[in-house]
Image (cartoon, rainbow, N blue to C red):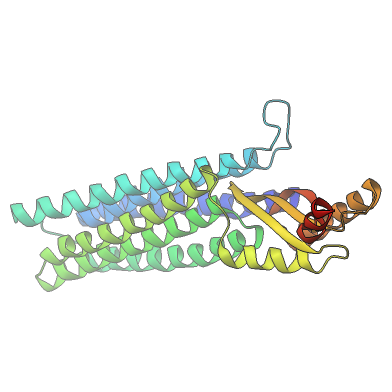
Amino acid sequence: MTREDIKLANKVEIRTVVINFILTAVQIVIGILAGSAALVSSAIHTLSDGATTIIVIIGVNVAGKKSDKSHQYGHERFESVASLIMAMILAIVGIGIGYGAVKDIIGGEYEPMSMEVAALIIAGLTIAAKEWMFWYTRAAAKKINSGALMADAWHSRSDALATTGAFLGILGAKMGFPVLDSVAGLIICAFIIKTAFDIFKDATNQMVDKACDPKTLEELEAVISKQDGVMGIDEIKTRMFGSKIFADIEIAANGELTLHEAHKIAENVHDAVEAAFPKVKHCMVHVNPAKNQTDEQEQQ
């Protein structure tokens, strides 16, 4: 991740933190005055969104540090660690919302509300702000290929969904159906847990050296095959390292080439791969003599 990428991530996340804390303060005040447990719960979720955003800022900045003696392959996996922490926090929030909803449905006790119109307006504004934050953060995450930033974008979307549940609950209370708050909470709980699972799965894959996707592998093979002197591809091994890719490539070349000539072909393949694929942090290229030539030499 370049310095420009880190600057963009910090800019996006600092704005997100400020907006989240403003929304949290407004939701808590109106939620308490209106007697809306749903709006107060939404405020707590928004506060958790701001807290996880701080985690993302730390993760992205650490991941962007250059290699050192203790981390010779870089620090990209710290971004995956940030995503894992976010996934766990999201899951806890989702389970908490679901538990509260089930408890209210079983108990059947709902507190009377006041200031429903003000609470509805704040909930609506929060939904709009959270949805904007989702698209804004998502665009930046795609631009710099940041898993942690993308996870934070989906956290904003989950918060928008949770606040939608609060909106429906407040609206239901105003219409005489307060149970809608709890029903919506169960639905939102499912959305949040699903989002947490997806983030956890993606971050885990980046931590356990999972191979890159088949489409990227096909594109790698196409680029390698086009390089002068490459007579074939014997093997390609890839592994995810945070949001980056490490590749070990074995190519076939004319067995009668000099060491200098073979090295030049490998160097060309190396440079072509890293130029064509920004996600490839490093690739190792090994040159083998073409198999048909090896067979002929053994027969002689």
